Image 1 (cartoon, rainbow over the protein chains, first blue to last red):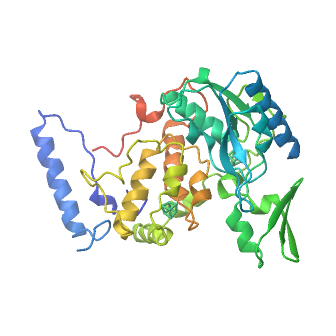
Image 2: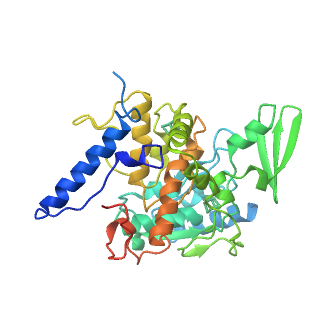
Length: 48
Length: 315
Ligand code: SF4
Ligand code: SF4
């Protein structure tokens, strides 16, 4: 994805066990923040 | 090159005569210059239709999928690697095959040739390392090296990796090539430029799917682009859909692609869609030391797990 020009911070991978509630919250917060910082996606979006 | 063709005819006729195979898959002369077409020969008497020159760029492994017959198949380096891939993926059995190996001297890019002359091409002849292009009253000679397909310029496995017969001595391998200069060039761009690079690359795509049809890896009975329930992708030449097609197709080829160049050879629009598959091929080599189809013993990277697999991207 990154190679074809999707912003680096738009795509995230994480492995979180169902017992890792704190990690889940941390990751979600981090994902939300970095995607918010990028703003709405303009690439790979079908117009109209 | 003539001797290759003669040897291919002789071996094919013999296999058919001795009833060792039901058919031989090879090439016959196409109706236009520089466009040999795949064919299946079933009678020993028809074996003299088979040809071999530098216009046999299509990968013949595509014609093996799920076949039940005993098959003789002509295989250059890349075809042989895709035959191995077919065997690994249970699409054909090794016992069904008699592989006639062709040490490959590279295939020519017909687009390069026709763009380099300013006349209509009537005939193309090969003599040793020269390619002689003839039109009405005009003629131009090229070094074969100048008009090779891009993937053949950087090929490091021109000799078949699996075969039962060989039509000639193995050819020397040019190990001294930089296989990934083009991929690195894109890697070094910033995100927006990369996006634009692929946007420009695909802008002429007419979604004819010739690339997919010629690909020996694209053998799904219903391709995701043809599904209508659910419809994964729009069917028109909308840029997002077109990119979705190319991007996903490339992913379906990850760890399997041998860079045979069939896709580019058949594209009517001259699109360099290897830019997608080659990145994945490079990643497979760098992350998993994997080159597809070199043998049938090793499992492909996407089908095996190793605790040391790189996972820095997983948080
Ligand atoms: S990729 Fe290699 S084996 Fe295949 S046609 Fe080109 S030179 Fe021959
Ligand atoms: S063969 Fe060329 S034009 Fe046709 S779908 Fe593939 S890239 Fe597009």
